[in-house]
Length: 104
Image (cartoon, rainbow, N blue to C red; front, top):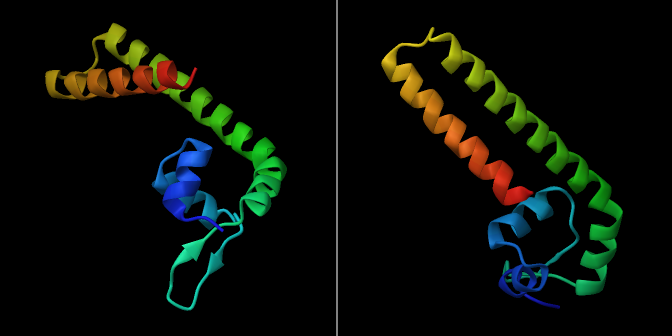
């Protein structure tokens, strides 16, 4: 049995991601003290069974970000935004591009 911190390191994810996986049903043991521990074999089985879902949601997120980028491009090209909204749109555009390039 390993801790959340150790599991995050093994999976090469953040502890916050481990928390999200727990909410999605990743198996764990909560000790009487409230400490959470993970059985690596059980976690690996869960990940193998859930990997299709993770891939689906990652793909969906990428597609959504692409749509955001395209919509912002159209809005900026049309010159229909006031200056403040244009600045917000550019920031959103940069963040969306950053997410897309970091995720592949």
